Length: 458
Ligand code: PFF
Image 1 (tube, rainbow, N blue to C red):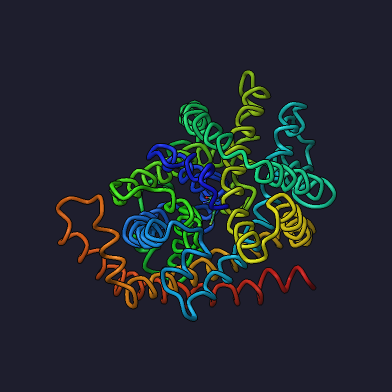
Image 2 (cartoon, helix red, strand yellow):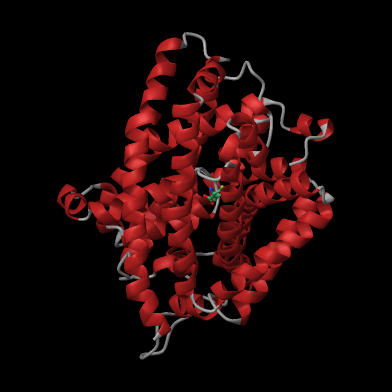
């Protein structure tokens, strides 16, 4: 994001900031990633851990990024350099690297969404399978998730991201988010009501909403890093995106209330998505973990085949998801683009085009097979974002805590108590939990390499 005043003004209102931050947070993380993590990590047991992470770790960590952004008025990379300085400036380099990795596969999944807009229009995933064939909705996902389809739509998604950023249409994004959030809530609510009428709804709600604590205890080593990864991913934390957005805020803004609003919207949309996905999967007799990264696609396609006006609803649904994905993707590439502009003085349009092309290239291997999505995704969410979070929290809460406290206090009335609680929360419990999560995340990445990935290579 350039620092020109004209651009600075666009998000200088509170609602503009919240819209932009919600636009970044709400995306494929809620609609694609959340249900698939829930399905793989045992349903409600995962949700409990996820909610704990979002509230107890994610929210305070978001305040850390807000503090850096508002006090420096700079983007992710410049913000950390100015706030902390010294060797901490290399943290900006890590943020840029993370942005690269995440957007490269995010765009492939965004491409699937775009593909489904067309697939809905033609009804491609609707139909009855022959006796020895896989159900049509499942087969369709399998067909488009890799290969030429995936590659072309990955290219289309990246092209749209580059276009939006190169043209600098922030206002367009703001408008997009204003339409997107109510549209998501409306369309998703309709689908959730429909899902509640299905035969498998009862069983699905039990799976989704009543946690099996025994399962949680037995499987915490895989659930904890999954919840950490999902918490950071869904809230756009760990790579400085929220630094950039908070740089547009004025000092009389209460950061806690803004952060709470963002977290609440974001969490609500994830939970709502699950209320669609699981009743449909259970009713179709599909085990919730089986479709993996295809959970949202397979389940929604399954339902649309059944609904009146299914195709039209499908187009609306996937187009809305595409807007959500684009507004998040824009925040990801912006970290890299603003770095290039600041650091190398490249014009915005050229920087965006070059970076977009490089990210597209990095995503090409992901279109070979869905297992590649997992490879990139586990590495990015469970390792990189958590690592970024740990380093950022350490710098802000241990080394530059005076500055951080002073900044947080602006805009919060009866401050002192809350500030101290926040500081000690991030200093000790948040850091300890994140370090454990990182360790376990590395472990689960190694397991993945030795298991599914080695199988794929063999
Ligand atoms: N929060 C976005 C989502 O849930 O889809 C993805 C994302 C955006 C992750 C920006 C990280 C980030 F920095």
